[in-house]
Structure formats: C-alpha cells, structure tokens
Image 1 (tube, rainbow, N blue to C red):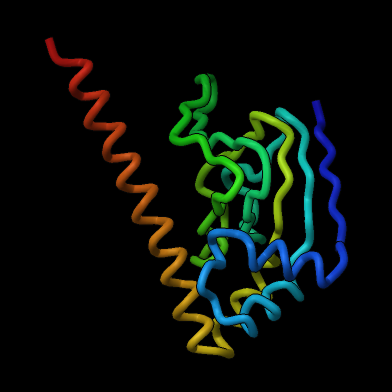
Image 2 (tube, rainbow, N blue to C red; image 1 turned 90 degrees about the horizontal axis):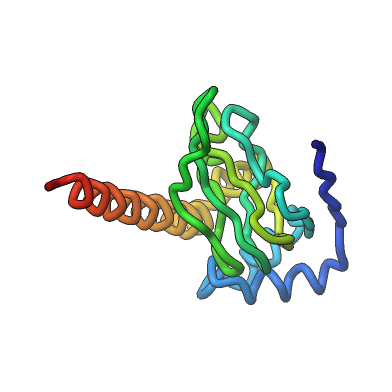
Length: 165
C-alpha cells in the first residue's frame, strides 16, 4: 500500500515561527533560524506511512510537530524491531549529516504526523559556510545521537535482565 505525503512550502513567517518554537531550535541565533526556515517545508504523513526508510537517501532533517513515529530495524523475513517511539517536539534523523547520506533505520508513522522538513544538502552547505551555525547544529545532532545511544543501551540492559533466570 502506498501512503501519500503532502508537502507544502508554507508561509515563510509561519515556518520561521514554527521552527523557532521547536525544541531542537531552542537558543539558536535568530539569524540561523531564519536561514534554516529558507530551506524548510511543512509535511504531513498518514498513519502507517514512512517518514524514512533504511537504505534510502538521507535528504532531510525532520522536526516532528505532532504525531508519533517508531524508529525500527527490519530484516527481511522478520517483524520490525522498534528501537524507540518519537513524539511531537522530537527531531528525526542524523544520517543526512554523515556520508554516505543513507538512512540507517525505518521511521513509521504510528499516528498522523505533521513535521518540518529541512533540506539536508542546503543544511550541509550552511554548516560549511558558517562555522558558528555549523558548531551549533552539529552539537545538537551529536546530543541527539548520544541520547539515542543511551536509550538503546538501557533497552539492551533491560532485555539482558529479562533473559536471566
């Protein structure tokens, strides 16, 4: 079944306000938020749709506004393993920042989802052109990676304790 996403350019002022209000952008310089808004669009996905799929080009940073998304690993012939469930206010994806720019996981919509989508190629260009912006954004992505690794570690510890007699 194919799930269609709607993508809208949106009013630039509205996008700036939504971007500035997202927790990922907290304390970013206003000029950086305005620059990011120039490469941002709003997107909606239905329940069951995929925000991203493993192996596909990692071409955007997604900032969830509303809805729930499960980060999953799926091997052929197996049921998906849910690594984490993300909610409105969470960022999704860091593979857009690191070569080979391919998604490492699937992200499936558990509910209808509304998000801000930032174009990865433009973000990488902005990072290269402005070291202050680059540091601020890569620190945020680094924090995201650390949080996800800590969450995964906690899950592994819990699974190990459940398997012991």
